[in-house]
Structures are given as C-alpha cells and as structure tokens.
Image 1 (cartoon, rainbow, N blue to C red):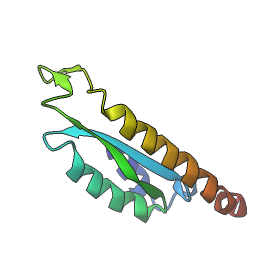
Image 2 (cartoon, rainbow, N blue to C red):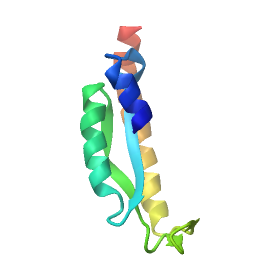
Image 3 (spheres, one colour):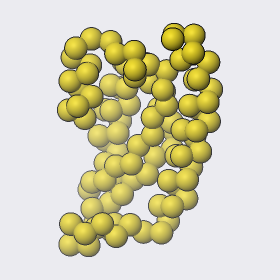
Image 4 (spheres, helix red, strand yellow):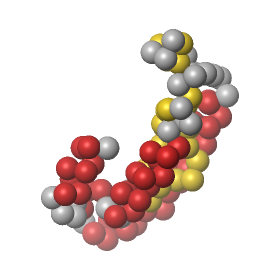
Length: 100
C-alpha cells in the first residue's frame, strides 16, 4: 500500500489508469477492511477493481501464524479473481489504447 501511496502523492499516474485490479488479503478478518480502503485509493487513480477477492485467515491459512498453508477452498476464489481481472483488463484495453 505504501508504494501505491507514493505514486498517488506525486499526482496522477497514467500507468495506473484504466487497469483492472484484484485482491488477495490476509488478517484476523481476512484483511477485508484493508481491501475496502485500497479499493477507494485505486478508484482515485482510475483503476477498476473486481468484485471477487481471496480472503485468507491468519487463524486457518497460516500454521502458527507464520507458515502459509492455505485451505483448498481458496482455489475457487482465486480462479474467480483471475477470470474477472482478465475480463475487465480486456474491456479496459480500448480505453488504454485511446490514451496512448
């Protein structure tokens, strides 16, 4: 997030415009609140965020809170995120080409 904030602080960055973004997050509640905030930031740099996301729990997807051992159920969510990013990326391609 801090790297994106650096870009945003410097003013609008065209390389971020009209691109699709998806989220994989982790935390006590799956990182959902952090994703909510990041969606607002990405909207300001004119990025389209996809609805689906992968929410990993520190309690169930990390052994002893440090070794990444994701539950198999996340594969379906991850594939949905990738599918949406590919679809939105293709849809936004026309806008990117107009800006070039």
